[in-house]
Image (cartoon, rainbow, N blue to C red):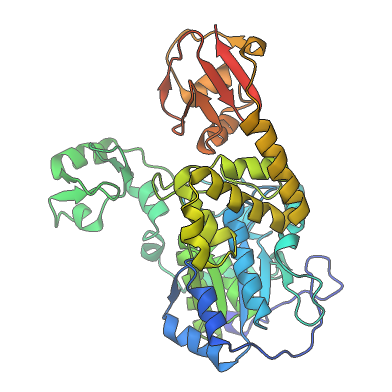
Amino acid sequence: MFNSHPVVFPHMENDCCMWYSYVVMKTSTDKKRIEEIFNRGIVVKILPDEKSFLERLFSGERLKIYVGADPTSDSLHLSHAKNYMFLEELRQLGHEVIILIGDFTARIGDPTGRMDARARLSDAHIKKNVAGWLSQIKPLMNFNDKKNPPKIVYNNAWLSKLSLGDIVALASNFTVQQMLERDMFRRRFYGEWKCTNCGYPNMFDQDFLDKKIQFQNCSNCASRTPKNEVFLQKESSNKKPIFLHEFLYPLMQGYDSVALDVDAELCGTDQIFNALAGRTLLKRLKNKEKFVIVVNLMENPKTHELMSKSRGTGVFLSSGPTEMYGAIMAQPDEMIEVLFINCTRIPLSEKDRIMALGPRDAKARIAREIVSKFYGEKKAADTEKDFIKTFSQKKPDKASFSIIHATKEQALTDFLYSHGLASSKSEARRLILNGAVEIGGEILRDPREAVFPQKNTVIRVGKKKFVRVG
């Protein structure tokens, strides 16, 4: 029976996992400090309830808390950094914290936020990505703490040992209907309808599908669309396949909580379903409660665009100091407060003063703070000086610009790629979303925007690439 299956943990000598010995620690019950951590604006909610979780923190009980991620790319971004910084604060309180690398679940592919199945990754690809991740996380957490270092684990250590019988038993805890409640599965199964007002792709409400309501409201702009218009789209909607192995993903991620026997999991708002699957399994298999600490995804408050390691959008931790500083400075103005709250630990009492500096100087202050966390204060200060000297004081010589010829209207992504201003369409999209594309002095942020720049228009791509339309 599955319930009697032993939880298999890797041994210290096994290279799939890094375990550390540590002495029993006392945890801090400093209420002011705990509330400071949880009230900064990073945490969205705690499930099943915040009060019970905080009471356990205030009690001095040492909790085991983990955060997991699949190595689907070789670089993390600032939204990931936020998670590890938060976990480090809990470690400093004396709690046991675990960084889980989903080397097994990466082979399945997390369907979260996807309208298609993820490509399967090879073992070699995963291993390469993991090596990059570990070097990027090191500046954010104190792995040299001999008493209570963060632990790094790999879920291949236990998931690869599950038998077919074990997996069937795990699957018996969930229904297909529960799986179809996930928005990405609903969108694929029923298709989507696009709002006629703003073009936002919406899910079909179940009450609408059951013909209990005669309209649907757009999730983005709240405008109401009558049933005849929506049903026309339903009949022609682009439904996508759901592969059986994708249903296994929340089961496998959920079993991580059982194998680690955790008290809490840290996850983004997009991972609540998977985290609650772990809560269900831990309760049923070990009769243990698990809290889920849900943190924000650092989305752009205006466009709702997310940083994504898979799509190549965001400020990446693999960047050198100059590139990282420049990428932060290129972020849209509405991201200043998001970056301040999530990626710095400047006191919140300083926020209004820094925001009052104006967008450029506020971003510069935040960029210096973030770069210093990865490369040290001296390197951050030198990088800032170089940035000001290079990009604020120097003006490019128009006579030295390369000449391109625009012959037709194109989507901005296609325009950059077809004129050799980006090596691929995905790179073009990344540059656009990072605010690194400027045409005629205007920064363009929509990859789908149609452009047809006129003669003598100056185009900037990135920090140093300038061309002129001939």
